[in-house]
Image 1 (cartoon, helix red, strand yellow):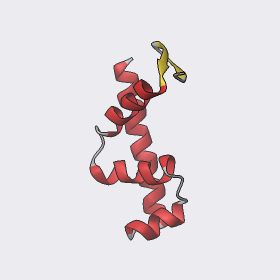
Image 2: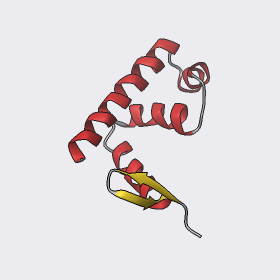
Image 3: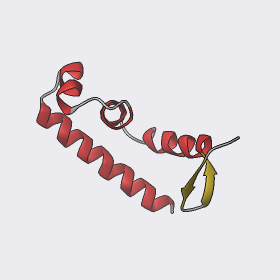
Image 4: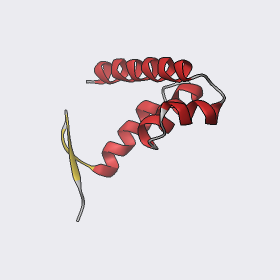
Length: 79
């Protein structure tokens, strides 16, 4: 049984939705992609991400905010 998710293009298998997300993430520079991966995908806190990458908490927050803003812009341009 395949699990589906809803998208702007109708119901997609989770695997297809995951590929779409990965494509969007790959448009980001490596450092911003890593921030999103750690905080939003793997669930690390801001403090944990900062410690892991040797950044300040505020640098992580700003980087994640900018990365998500860029992803939202990329997404809206594709739809």
